[in-house]
Length: 206
Image 1 (cartoon, rainbow, N blue to C red):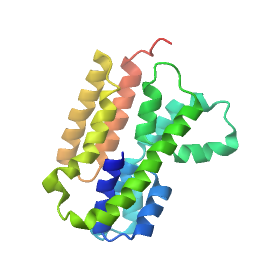
Image 2: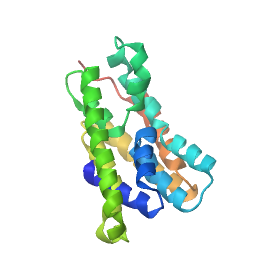
Image 3: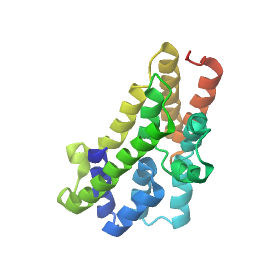
Image 4: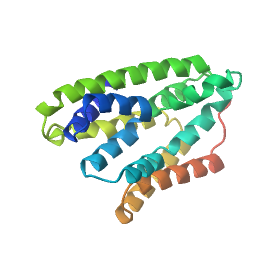
């Protein structure tokens, strides 16, 4: 996560964001995927509303994550749920759901603190040294973003049904990306895969 964040911090710095803006974006947005999407839009001078709508669409998957985690927080104080929900992220979700025994709310919260602590520090480090790397793609640093998500998916693929759903979602996303601009392939493929998975896959035995 630290290395992944340094790449984003460097890109954000090159896009013209100050150190304060980078730190604030990490705290307020709290979503690495949408931050990677937002930076090139900001650099290109996109209208603020377009950036907000696009990042919201990319983060719609957080609704599904929150719904999956909700049973673990059934007895959690409701006054703190909004703060906990703000910390929902792909890495903490993957760690929590990958456990064979049901993970309690404090396991998830602990992972959120670890993930975002390393992300914020990494982003600031990347912002400071980012000017030294003018072309991240030359060193393969631009692959850090998809590499993280491939690693998260890999630990979730345990059976044949998992592979079928994941493979189908990947092919669908590629097909949609070929015909539609923007990031709609992420949203459509994610919702389609979630729906198909809910229909054809049986819940795991406790």
